[in-house]
Image (cartoon, rainbow, N blue to C red):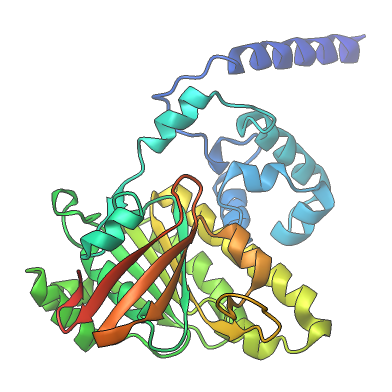
Length: 340
């Protein structure tokens, strides 16, 4: 009888909890892993080490998967997942008004060229992944360097006043170029280089692991821009042939999702550069296509295709955007950086 009474009390308590959960206080801080039932500091550390930073990531797991990845008991994992589903409001639809409110947090970063900013509706947006693709020498790395410098500017100057993380896969980062561009916008070159954190990724597995490192760094510094230059080079070199294509695309997909998660949590911009390949069977138009196929295309919020033009000019074409029309912008790359 005692058990039935206990169960009824538990059910009544959980019903009350569910009723209370409908009232959402907007000013209340977002629940974290520590708020889950039965999660103390040691378990929270285990979950974070296994790569579970937010409640939604836990809520969508199955108990055996969570148990294996975080090295926890299956019963404990089931309890944690149940708690995460409640706290993460997993089935919850939100109103358009709430989403509009979230959009108000979006900030814009200037590129230094007003034509390019105009094409992007006022600049590069936070909470988004921007893919910049084009042939060798089309200016992809230059855009990365320029945005890194501009992110250091105050918001009133079109910057984000934050720190930058640069994942370099092809040894293209040049501190001398950063110093040049920083001087041009009135920032002390040494201070600029101090706030840009560069990691060389030696293979695709290392590249993926560096995103976890960014999450750890973001607890102590205000990361506002993440640059991956280039996104696909290691994947392309390591997963060769049709037989490896599915594995490559799955890994790329997961990598992009984790980058997007950091962009949302940090209210930051993720800029990925991408190479192109020639598509000889294209009957009309430009035969170049970005590497990574639909996976990279769908995961990117904005896609910019760069190509060279006469007299050192570059043409940026906005290929894809959730709310902006396709269009083109012309800019130049000078010793001082990107200019109209």
